[in-house]
Image (tube, rainbow, N blue to C red; front, side, top):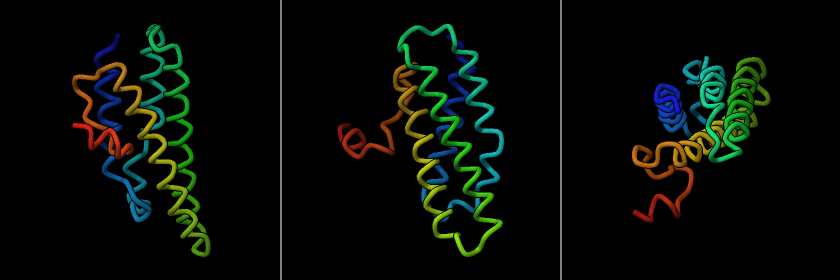
Amino acid sequence: MSSEAIAQLHEVRELLASVQGPSSVRRAAELEGAAEKVASCAADLVDVEVPRDLQLRLAFAVRALQGAEKAARAHRRNPLTRPLSHARFALNTGKAGGWIHGTLQILDPENTPPSPYDPDEANAG
């Protein structure tokens, strides 16, 4: 298992946790390259057999990050749909963060804090 890939996933998770909320769409430029980084990590972790759906989880995270980037572009282009773009950005960054966090809980549970996306888990500790 690649410790560098896990470290990069932690970095992306922390970045996503910092851009929560609809108004964070203005910080979308900070996410540039995050989808590629997650895809690269997935390739580095291709030999991990447990869980079997690891690649699928990371693929969903990449797709959500791309959706967040698309929402940010729409936010810049079309002032009339900005409220919708805010919501789409927040939804997609939350989904990506959740997929990455779930993956890290499996790969690196000792170094993964409770999920900011799951209130039951955050209150369990």
